[in-house]
Length: 256
Image (cartoon, rainbow, N blue to C red):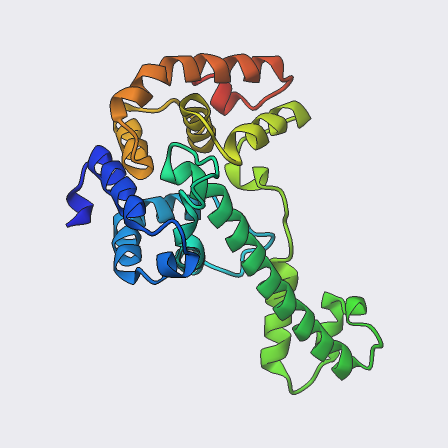
């Protein structure tokens, strides 16, 4: 069972799978559904990790919706890694797919929700006799009769409408623009072990325990010893960056 594999075994098997794919024809690569399904099962933990770092500009979708979208996005591009051969490929499978799955899922779900939001308010505008759906306001809902479901959907959308900053989800309090820059720099697409650990500490608002490091190693298929080796440097670097930013929230800084 792939769930019983160690991170090193997952990494080795992932490379083996991609080495088995033909390099001369994209369609032949895509046709290896058996290998795709093995990758899909092997990296379920990674898909959960990406899901927790996928931010929408609304909260109409739950965790399971986003998780399923991440999986669908992987299926749509799974053969991209290590292809074509001339392309420079990141050392880690996760470093390649994290930004792509995250961005594609955010774009897909945000577009779907905007379409739903727009169509609902267009119907409300029609019922209210307004020329533009953008003119519909929450206080107008009391004038719509006999369309309870539409009104309820519109009110849910008004109440949950559009927050855009990823920092809102990180729950790091009292951040100035300098601190927000740190969040963006380290959380969007960690490309080395130190920045990966920094992004994890920011996400948790605390130092990492050995158990948490082991979990990260499993998700990323990275040797746990390599992460532990740079953990102290990651803590020092994050502390330095936070100290350089004025008025960063105490919750993270004091724990460093």
